[in-house]
Image (cartoon, rainbow, N blue to C red; front, side, top):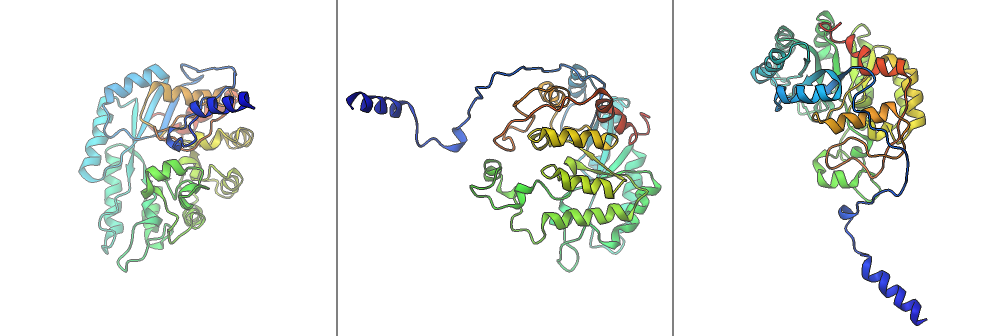
Length: 350
């Protein structure tokens, strides 16, 4: 018994039973093959990034090192600031950068808001914008004259989408957010650490559910069948590929990008691979992470290799306590996802 007590005392001396969750950073004991492609099998078009505060010269250096042929900056500015950013990147390297404009909701309560918006769209196009992005504030935050939430499918906005169609200007939607963001920030939430650090990202008390927001968006997409829409971040349905497949089947004018969703796709590799094979013509490569060499190579590892249980590209906070698996996609699918599908949306490259 004395020897047993001594062993318990020894274990207690080295193990912290009160270790804070944030300090628990386990390293996997698995020994598996590691393949980290330095460059992709085909030139890449990163269709979803945010470069407003970056130096084009430095971004180009990273692009060259990682096999990124072209990068699309989604400006998060509006008005004159947005135009200046579009001009800066297009002048730096017109064959390497494209831009997506940001929907400007200033004056949404004005009677002439629709016409003002159409004028703004024309100005963006004149300065090279290749699409327009509607962010999650529509449906979650923005309110009308009477104080009620503006719905994504508000019929007052129909002329705006009709003008996008006339301009051949694709519309990107970032509607809602990951499912965990709509759940209570409690011990059952799989992204507890991330949300505890950023509680303002949570929408568990929202007056509208995530599913209703998605359905509002989908009614807009269905209402404009000749207009191409891009659902950012797997159309915010990366946790439920069956539901996303239903939407893809029902909405042939919907494309998606995979930006910031390798954490979701990579932990369900069998279902994700089947999804990529089925919708290969409608999936866009995107990162939504500031350009870094290792970040891009992790994306290539995810798409190209059959490596198991490795870290996903993410912001420093990460999105959840899990790792991902590679999809080892066939070359014809890789070529479409990496480049060919984006060419359909960027006329100057096609």
